[in-house]
Image 1 (cartoon, rainbow, N blue to C red):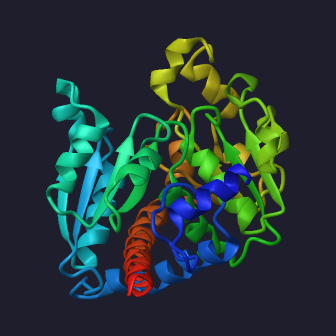
Image 2 (cartoon, helix red, strand yellow):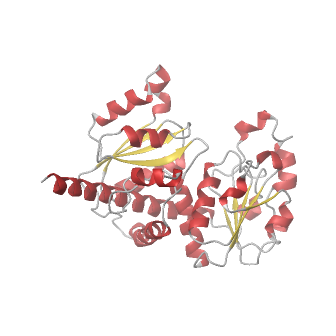
Image 3 (tube, rainbow, N blue to C red):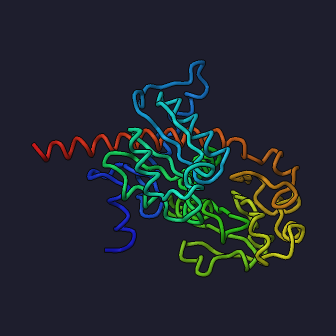
Length: 334
């Protein structure tokens, strides 16, 4: 059994439907396309006078954030509420675990609240997988970002953004620029783009911010920004993680901007209709020029809108997959 095969049963039920959403690694193209199609159908909900559908009525979604995040937490809350779920949000980073409680203890206390789904964000890679492996049966776990490992809903909202602006992935050149080494967003995007058939995926960064063996993701690595941006259709800028700047990986933020910051002049190297993306929060003047972030080619605010629809899709599909699995198991027991 390959590592990818080993991950499949944890995320999927016996019929191949989504049950947990932990990583894009190993998920089939058909399932990623289903997530995108489902999210497309939810976009019009946000334009209604009453922004609600009853798919998760009577269900409880617990947002468990061991790591701070305003944008991800807020969009998951909105997504769950638009699906009519009851929502509890716990900022665990400022509560029990800071007092010495273990992850397992926290999990057991949350289970006692009879939640149907946990959305988990954690600074440690693999935390969401750990919780999914140890949670009560039929409780869905959604990874809201874990360490340097994965941010699958961000990856999928980026894919929805690309698909809505470019139509498909089969003929695209996509450049991911910046702190590739520390970025869970970069990993999720590389996996998603490859699975969805993008033929030209480029990562651009200083050598000190490129992971060893990054080519295993099916990408081409560049250390020269001008060379990497030439004729691309999509530019995904990453946040330069300031907390990593003290590690000697870069001389300074100013030096990074001089060599890798996305300016109007550098964007002109891409195709004229190229779109510019960023997972946020943006460090203006560090990884991107304000004129670009606010310019006509920027779709950064669209990403936030699409993020709500993607999270609605994932929440509803995982809950449906859990219910189907329960029915299958009940049928086998009879």
